[in-house]
Image 1 (cartoon, rainbow, N blue to C red):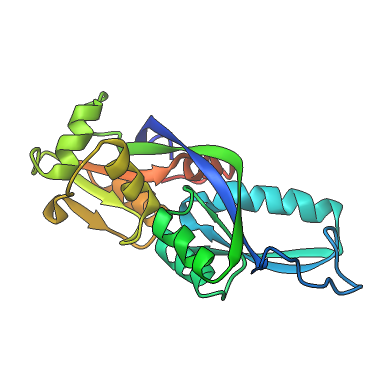
Image 2 (tube, one colour):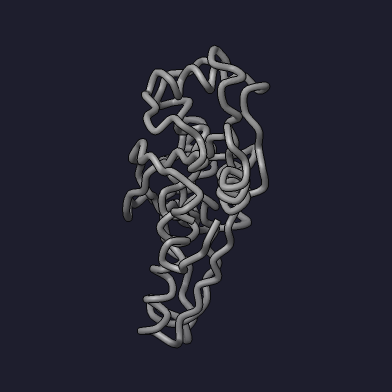
Length: 219
């Protein structure tokens, strides 16, 4: 991978676990066969964060064989919608609930719990064959709002990307030019695309780069 990509570490953001508790903040009765170290739980995780969370789950389950954590990677919006619809009780995202999302729970007398459990970063990657090795914040902003259209093709993981949403907020971009960016299927596709195409810049979670380096995958 490092032979075909150049990587720029860009911005740091939080990794938060959101738990939707029962109405009036009361915990449901726990079955005798389940506690914090035994049982099974499904957890939705923002696809951007999947590798780093998967490592934590593997370590936990290696120590507690009676615990099963089913980790499901989802785009940010789909994970939030599942929490709001009560089809998932635990999700892991890159942000806190918005005021509107918090009101949704308050109106139903549900108390959601938010815990920051770590941090990650956004990495901008381009093909090793491209001449440019430096990109500024103003360049990134110009690429996303379309004023540098044509210089690079910007690709990101999916239409509900938390990385793109974060950059829009971080750089105070009112509107991203849809003709200046392209959505793929996931972070793996972004890394593969950039490694094979000069003149492209990929937006990915930094933990995906670390994961592929650790696994000695070449792109």
